[in-house]
Length: 637
Image (cartoon, rainbow, N blue to C red; front, side):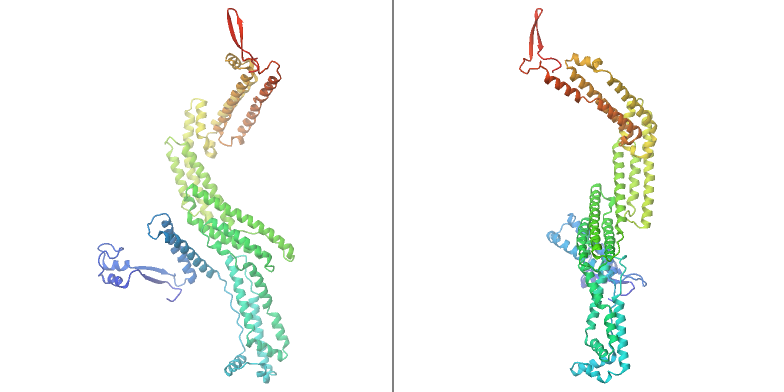
């Protein structure tokens, strides 16, 4: 098979030749092929034995073989294998080789990911053209002749041409070309502000290979003889400038120092991660490796920041692939919360590691002293992080609204509102919520507007239902009961605005109740009906006072609860609610009876009449009868 830019078809035969030929000739017995329908003709049986895959694209396609194979592997074979593995784990398919599958499937998955990683690296390789140092034809011919004679070529073989200026100029011209060729590669740089981490790594690995190859070429006998001939002809300027101007040795030292950081860089752990937890561990491993910047003293610190930005781009790409495959907005609440917690942990680890790396860079900046201050790190994954945070808030608000509606609308008459809320969320499920491109942002904003419109319809129905119930209420108590049922929905601005007029009247009712309670408290306990009742029941005055105050406290708590029923949660931040809160707290503080009890306890302990050895009852003789009395002062008990 020859690769070309044109599409080609590969046919895979799934049966043995005899069965295939029988299917082609139409002599295959019925039922011999499971895929063939009963009574099918020869042509359908023949077709059923072929699986055709169209590889490549149009004639003008720019796809490389690596891109082509990686696309089929990543989007075709890998998802198919994952689906089979997941089905096998879930028991959806009975297989006698269950134990073998448990061991073999993870191994195959790792091999597939390794192949995918290798194909990706091939796509991201930055090609550096090899340095070619052509040998002068005369010297090359002389070496071939000497080799045929079985001897080594020396300067003495060119003794008659040492004074030949044209020959020496020819050699010097060739050396100048070598110098330019080496300089071309030695001075080559890569824009580290773009591209992936693998491209940065492969560029310098490729540079090392090319420079070492050039160094080996310079050690060949042909090149060494050329330089010696120039020295022998006293062309010292040519040879010295060649050795000084190529910059090969400093370039090799620089690349070698760069590779102290980039060699064995653990980016593969991130690129082959299949879960957010693996990404988190990969981030830790990468930044632990980044501490090698201490040894890579020639690697610019600003370039190290660019390397972190490249890792951020790779992280964003991999995280997007992992989360897109999971369909976040269609997951159940528990799975969604678990994924959000994993993402939050990933971003927390990234921020912590980046903070420590910044500190390390600041220390290196002071030690080196010859580098400019570093700008901030622009992390591309922060766009995706912001979208994930937004999705989490959106899902939380939707689930809260749905839960409230399910709890509040229980009489089955508001099914329209429930249907509207469900339909609104289906709009969100139909878009790629993780697309943070310009187009993706526009789609996300559009679907949020349509979602809000559907929620507005549901709120309109709920509002109408609520106003009907409030209008039908005959007493304030019934209104409070309605508000108690619907108050969880008051966080919605439309619903809160629709019942504002009822809120005002009921809040005024609560204010009047609290005021009457305060007036009642201002009366002395001894003059109240409660004092007479406790006396009749034999309750001591101090205990009666405490009971009376506690009753008032409970009544105040009921009134404050009504404020929450009317204004909803967070009523303390409402203008009217804040005033009532302050007034209620001050009133409750006045009704505290701890000081009354402490005063009674002190008096009881200091009382000389109190004697624990006295008899509990006292029998006194009256007129023609005896009386059984308690032998303690009523204030004591």
